[in-house]
Amino acid sequence: MSDTKDMHSKDTATTPPRSLRELYVAFTMLALQGFGGVLPVARHELIERRRWLSMDEFTDILARCQALPGPNIVNVGVCVGARWFGARGSLVALAGLLSVPFVLILALCYLYASFGQAPAVSAALRGVAAVAAGLIIGTALRMTASKRLRTWRALFGIGAFVAVVFLRYSVVPVLLIAAGLSLAASWLLRRGGRAA
Image (cartoon, rainbow, N blue to C red; front, side, top):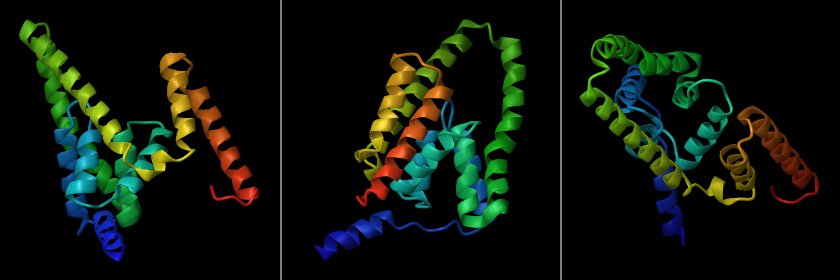
């Protein structure tokens, strides 16, 4: 039994980045790898390769970041940077995510303006979009392994998903209602003395 606990604690042990430079390089590489969606690459890089976060920590950070305006990966970068180095870490992670890709985007915009109507370019862009969708679906499936998604709280997320995707309600009201209901449910359960 203790061996199982030791193995589990080794799997979830996290180590901080060694420096702000390492943080910058890691988020720059994330930005350069994520064509059409960085989250699948970020999950692998931050949890499995660098071990800066556990799966539960990544799930928590991502859940909070999805409720904030702006791209999810930028919000995740700011949170991860702040976790290890405070405000400096947030700025460095943000710079890593945006600096080199910004220059590349300017160059790609120029090329697209010149060659975007070519059939080969259009076909390539459709292929990239399909790959990005597959990566996002794969990340969602891998995140279901998190213990946080196997509690009663997941019902609020499932309900919000159904309301937005299938019932076509607007995201903002659904998010506000789901967040309010989940907070109220947690408060009532804690007030009742039961484990939330």
